[in-house]
Structures are given as C-alpha cells and as structure tokens.
Length: 293
Image (cartoon, rainbow, N blue to C red; front, side, top):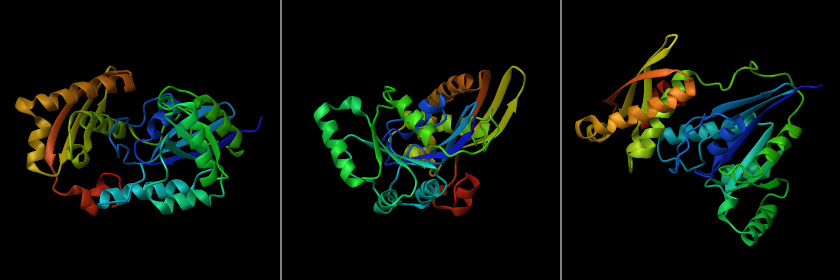
C-alpha cells in the first residue's frame, strides 16, 4: 500500500480552538490551551503516525497585528505555515467575519493547496445561525471545503481527520515513526509552567513572561527540573512570587502534576524568578528563547 505523508497547518485568529484541535488529533497535550488570547507563541508540530501515513500537524500563533518584536516573530511562524503546507486548515468560530490581518486572508483566498475551513464552536450555536455562517464563508472562500466542528466536544473531528488523510500526497515519512513532536522535553516544561502563569495571573503579567529550563536531569525513576521564570520588571517579579512565595508555589505544584502525567514519571521541580528587562523587544533575547528576533 502506498504511504502518505504531509504537513497540515492550522491557522486562524487567537482563541478559535487551534490548539484544542491539534491536541485532539494527536491525542496528547502538546499545545497550551487557555481562554486567553495569544497563548501559542511558537509553531509546534504534532506528528500522527499510522502504518501507511504520517500526518504532521502544525499549531501556529493566533493571527494579530504585531505591537512589539515578540509578536512580529510570532507572525513569522504563521507566514512559514503557508510556505510548506500540503493542506491548510483555516479555523474560524461562529460569528467571526475575517482574519485580523487582511494579507493572510488574501493568501488563503488565493491558495493553490487544499483549504479546509473549520467552523468551530458550533455547540454554542443553533441551526439557523450555523446555516447563515456556512453560506457567508462559501461566498468568502468559494474554493474551500467547509466543515462545522466542535474541537472541544470532539464533534466531526474524526471526519475532518479522515478527509485530511485523503488529501495528503504520497510520500515517505518525514520523521521517525515513533516521534510525537519536533520539540525537545525542555520546551514542554517551559510551556507547562507558562500555561499555569496564564491561568493564574491577570493583565499584562502572562504576556511579559518567558520560561527557560536550565536543568533537566532524568534518572530511572525521577526527573529533576530547574526552571527560571523571566519577567520584564521588578514589580512583576513580586507578583509572580506572591505573599511568602505562595503564588509561585501553586504554579510549581500544578506544573509538576501535569509534567508527571506527560512524562509518566515522578518529577521534582524548582522555580526561580528573574528580571530580564524588555526581553520582548530585544532581538538577542528573542533568539535565545527560540524566536526570530
């Protein structure tokens, strides 16, 4: 039987459910999911393997108009998703009208590769609104296939997955068949800690934070981790730590529980907080954290 393989890239505005969909496809929690916008900062690959296929899914940051260097780098990850896609998944939610950047929308309209428009969160809508939305998107993107889904409720997700399989080109696998992602372990440690910060801190704090894992030592029965939470200002450092260290402790405890599930092993984690002034607009610092600074 011929082997199929290809890159399936998910794009859309912030918070439309891209990470939820990719995690549903892969069956692992690779991307952060929170109710806050701009949760995903990198382009994260999730690899789904079968005997006769390899589907390489790519979760990308939500499309925004960049306000500082970090966001510009995030949008560069989205641009790269257009360049190597074999199938493009354009994800919108009920009530949405267009991408926050018209240039990206025009790229979809003129795409030469198959585009599946996934109309997400249909569990929050009724039949009439759904029909109106389908009609609207048919006019906007006549060449796209429209699939109503609920990534959260797993509605129509398998059908979309099967349709993608049909569209994948014949090709040998790009990655080893036992590989789940292109990112190293430390990346998932950083993202898990950052997710807890997104969940527990308000306003600008989560967006001013970057996490760097300085130590990842794996023994037979335990993983020992030391990670640094970077903030931009001294006042933010105090907020992250909290009264007598209580806020930081909560982040550590919750991150440890998630990482023990992810690695299926006992985890010991130490967290520190450092001030790294204006790292979001510093090209050298952005490169250090894996962005295109």
